[in-house]
Image (cartoon, rainbow, N blue to C red; front, top):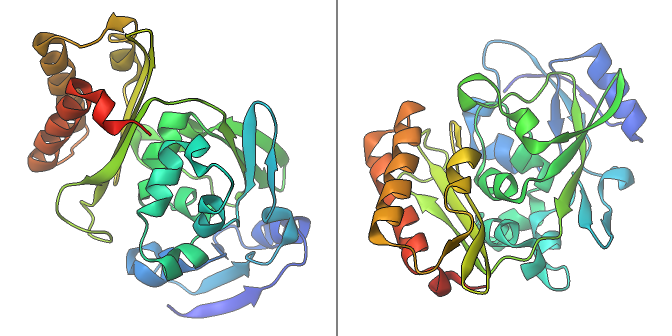
Length: 280
């Protein structure tokens, strides 16, 4: 990496002004992604860095009755240190699986979302949670559902010259949650992927089901999830097999390698067959 210049803004407004001058600038907070994956750094041009890791506006965590609002520069370790981290459901499980304790002390929630060349491991969990993100650019401030960051072909579409400032995590109660690596290649291998699933069960009925895969692309099919909503547990072998194979077919259609798609089918089947084994 050849650095052209480094900006150290004192406020979010100054950071946005830096992006207006250099729309291709790279935002740097914890730096773990940029230091571990060379493919995230352009090799064909000089790089401008905007250091946002110490901006107090990005370091806050606020709770309401409906959601937790987290600044983009909050570290994964800080998330896991919150009282009752299980309230974060799949995100807490995904964050705990990232690297080592020293990596989690540096890696930020914003960094797991704003990568432009892949969806990081926490993205599958955030997709299942239907999180929202606050983006700022020279035109102003906007809130979007996290799937706004998913573009054509279900590939990353984080907008240029934009800055992620906050993440809103709905308070949802999950009875069963699983997050695990999907396949053998570890990150930063391009085929490294993460599987996340969560379910809410009410009086023996599957009230809500969410399943996602994050990697080079995002796999999530809400219409398919809805086919099992309201079904009484335990699901039949036919219901489980049909859903699992349809999920794998969706992944294949999005160019997920066949071996990983097959493993996805097995993971989904195991989750649906015995959701009680994945109780929080």
